[in-house]
Length: 463
View 1 (cartoon, helix red, strand yellow):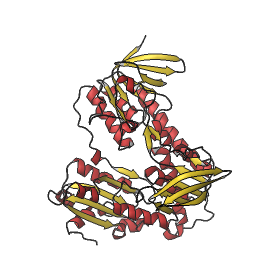
View 2 (spheres, rainbow, N blue to C red):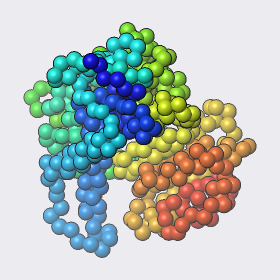
View 3 (cartoon, helix red, strand yellow):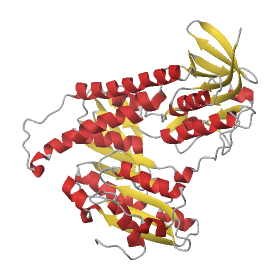
View 4 (cartoon, rainbow, N blue to C red):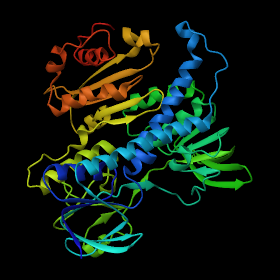
């Protein structure tokens, strides 16, 4: 006999498990179906374990700078296996926490592969056979996986995807990273800090191409200073794998050259996990591996929603989580506000960190805004100098007519924490006057956020 639920969530990543928990909090009878592991890619193979790796690299980098702080550190080294073990331990701890939250909120967990089987029906293939569950609403939260390009497919030995890079079989000596988005540049930063001779190839005209052009240029200069080789407007045409080496054929400016590496990381984007779910049979539209939805994550088929990476950009865990809350509240009869994509911050945890929210200066101008732009460098901030982190910049973009904060862009130490101040500002529809009249604590890095706003209006103090 089929189990009956008010809401069935397919996938237990950040969007899925949050949707399930919120639904249960609202009094719904909820089941969550997961085929692999609770927490999804983010907790197990993405956001969390990569940040654990990058923290080890950050500490390693600081140990080499000990004398800058009047300290002594000798015989500095690392044990890659233990670095990875720590990362996996962090991921395991958090993944286990999801199971506890499900139990606490009385969410039924079904481990297996789900498929839509008709209106309000989901078929689940488990290790005990196939069972059917019914629900008034179904939420698809199956996430995404690494894109594979022909000829660049990972093999786990010479060519890695993000999963291989999180449990590296060896420490690269000569590393090629294909793609300079958040995933690619974070791995490039990690392995470069640990001593790999790192080359980054980006098909667009600059690294971190979704960021403001000034921020990208600043970050590029920092990466090059750290020893990375950056090739922009370049394409890896093919990889020749032989023995313990890979020869990459890289086209730049119409000319192709070959370069030899012992390791390649492919970070060329993601594709949605839409296969095997019965979407087409259910009449759900899929566009380029992503489920098409409206602003409330409704698929167009009554009672079926899609959230998170499988529903398209921005591919961020925090976006998925808030979509999960919104959808659960809709299903429970509430009236939540839709998510505003332009008010979702993006964070990249390379060294230096990069963070942003809203429109870039170029995009604001393209949309017809007359803009006022403010900038403030880390070198002008006392806390940044005291931390030994004087390299960085904060940039703010305002509408010259209304004073609306259109966008904020940062590069430097701890900017992934600072950006939330501007995110809140945009959510509350803050104007430049509100920000200028806000008292920022001293001495903090956050003072630079104030100074950048002041600079946009010709009132900057410390520059």
